[in-house]
Image 1 (cartoon, one colour):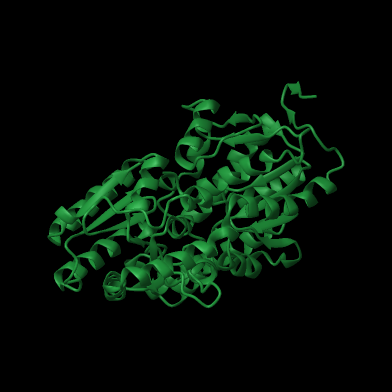
Image 2: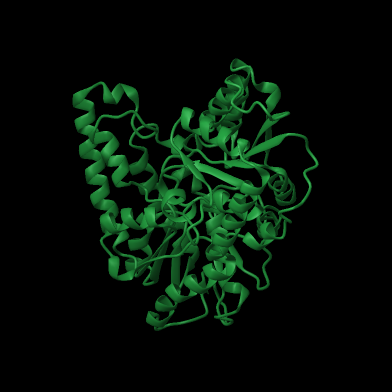
Length: 437
C-alpha cells in the first residue's frame, strides 16, 4: 500500500479526469519514479486503490528527487527538504511549464517558483502541513516527540535555538503558502493549522480525500466469518508516526489481562506498505517487540498486499485499529468503517474531528489515547453482543458517504474551477520542445 498522502495525490490526478469537465486539458504529472514507466504507475494505482484512468496523462520524470529525501538532511530536516524541493521544482519547470500547477505532495516552497517564474495559476491540496502549531507547542513545552529528540528537551539552550528555528521556518512557510491562489485541505485539523500559518481563509476549503467507499460497502454486513474467533486489523504504512508499537503493546495487554474471557481466539493483523529498507527494519523491530511480549503467535504482518487481499481482511475483521496521534485525515479509518469493521482510532486529528463522529445521534466507532485505553476499549467491543456491534457497523457505514469519490470530485472541481477561470492562456499545457495542440 502507498502512504495516505500518495493516495490523496492519485485522487487529485484521476478523479477530475473521470467526468471530463475539461476535456481539452492535457494532464501532466511530475514524478521522481524514474525506474518505472508511466504505465506501471497507472497499473499500481489500479492494483492498490482500484482507480482506473479513462483519459490518458503524461508523466514528466524528475531525477533530483533525492533532494527532498529526509535521509539527506540529518539536521535541520524541514529546511533542507524545503530548499531541496525548490531545486526539484526548478527541474520540473524546465521540462514542463503548465498553465495551472497543483501541488498535492506538500512542496509549498515550489509555489512561488511556479507562480512568479513560471507565470502559472497555482493551487495546493494540503494533506499535512510541513510544520504545525502542534509541533511548535511540543518544542516550546520541551516535550519529547517525533520532531523533538530527548537530548534537545534536556538542554534549555538547544530547546531555545530549536524553537527560534521553528518559528522562523513557520513564518517562511506561511509566506510561500500564501502564494497559492486556491487552497484545499483534507480535514478540519489541517484547516485549523493552515489558516493559522498561511492566513488565506478567503481561498481555503475543506476537500475530503477520495475514498473508494463503494467497494467496501459492497461487503455484506451479515457475511459469515470464515475464521474462528476475532481478527483485529491495522491498516497503515509502516512509518514511525503510525505508532504500530502501541497497537502491539495494547494487544498484548488485552491478552495478558484476559480481558476477553469468552473469546475463543484473537489475532492482530498489521497491514501496510514498506517504502524502503528503513520501513523493513521497522517491521523487523515490530516482530521482535511481539516476541518480547510473548504474543508473536497472535500477531501477523501483511506487507504491500494488493487491494483485493486488503478487502478480504477487512471483510473478516471485527476491529480496525488506528494509533497515529494527530492523523491529518485517516483514509484507512474510513475504509474500515465502510467495510463494516468497528474502528478504534486515536482520539485526535481527523478521526476525532471529522470521521469517528456520531451519525444521526448514533455512535460510529471508538477513540482512545494510550495503551490502557486501547486495551480496555478493545475488550469492551469484543464483549458486546453481535446485535450491538451490528448496529454500530450500520451507523458507521451510513456516515461514510461524505467521503466518497463522487463527493471528492464535486468539491475538488468546484475549487479548481477558480484557477481555470483566472488563467488567460487556457489549455493546452506546454511541454518543453513541443506544443501540444
